[in-house]
Image 1 (cartoon, one colour):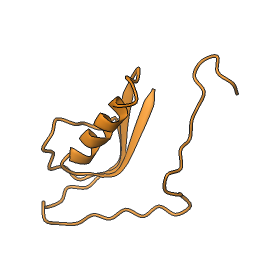
Image 2: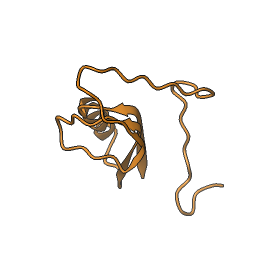
Image 3: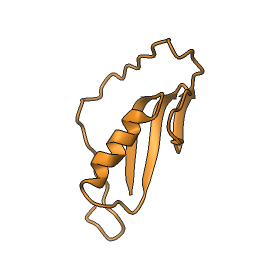
Image 4: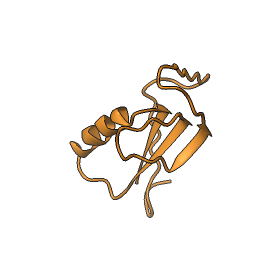
Length: 85
């Protein structure tokens, strides 16, 4: 299971690109999408599984998200059933 996390979901194009890149590494059993902010205005049929905050905006508004204590590129891998603990 892969959980893809995005800070702000807008048109869906960034998520689509991430899914394409993920597919280059093989097919995941399932992929779930978690976003901190969903601002609407989708251009692609993408719906997140987890949303921190729905924030309706105008298309020309800019949304920035800050997260303290998080390093870019940090990856957390959880073992699957029967995996090492």
